[in-house]
Length: 479
Ligand code: GLU
Image (cartoon, rainbow, N blue to C red; front, side):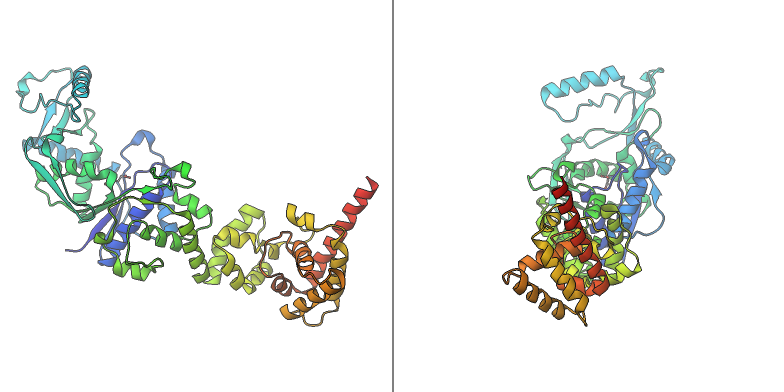
């Protein structure tokens, strides 16, 4: 039997990080077994439906680097088929019409609440005579849940989970307006799509028992289940917006690479010995439901960052720069041209070795794409003071007279200027130089940066910094 998994998100507006992990696990399981992962949008809630949310899910999955097989299925479009199955269950005597009025249901709900019962419906129409049906109430269809015994789910992650059938209610499968309920739709779709493995969050475990009632009533084979524990925030509560980032989009915008997020999400809930860095190939080979943790895992940003740093180093330069490009625009309003990109590439090994996120990579390389007049951040501006002016002037003279501008030559020049102008202190030379060249106080090696920028651009930036000090001095003096 070939494996068929499914990714069936509800279009709620964004892709939750837990949904992303579920997608990853379904994808890995399908790919490992040479099977298929199907993609179904659970869009039956038409009131809240919005197409942008669907697009978001598709974009999220694509960004994560996960693919699916076949066309995307809309659950809503299958609603006729779902309704037919409800009628079939009725004809088989496995379901029945229920004519309870809202008031009657309310009474039953109240009574159950007082007695502390979970299921409230008292099954009054289960065996009632159809001729006693009122004319003025459109009925719902309810499934006949077993009244006695127990049900066990052999869950591939949780192990055997058993409940008493008393806990099951005769839940509604078709509403009075003829629309199918979620519980029915999921089962019919999974059956029709040939799903063999249902891997999903353990918040669906209760649903599984109810869904099994439908499988049994139809005489359909049940899929193998694997219910994954939730992802928790660092405080132990379900991962949500207030933990900083709950959606895949936010991780993309914080500068994480999809490969790093895949690796991190895999490890968050599944393990293979002590391995932390696991390539896609290894994941496909090693992944198994039995390796999934039963307990909920806490999200650890520090670990994600260290995994991200690893993948930044591993990613080919062209790909890394392509992924970084939108951030130059969004963070610095700069679109690096071909020349800047070529400079970034020259300095990429050091940039990669320092960066834990793409944002850091961009912030520390954007100076290559800047032109004079540079904007100086607050700390850099503070370094560009009258004390620094003679140092920068001496550096400018030195750069203008340097023959071959390589890192060693620049280092020698700085040492020389430190001796003559800064009591031998390299920091007093390197720091204003960095401020003048990059407009910041954080960057890769300033010797390398100047060597890559070249003599002309380095001198231009030094002159601009000296002018800037002079002008602010004039302003101060005249003020
Ligand atoms: N649509 C459900 C959700 O987004 C998934 C249901 C399932 O996996 O059966 O939580």
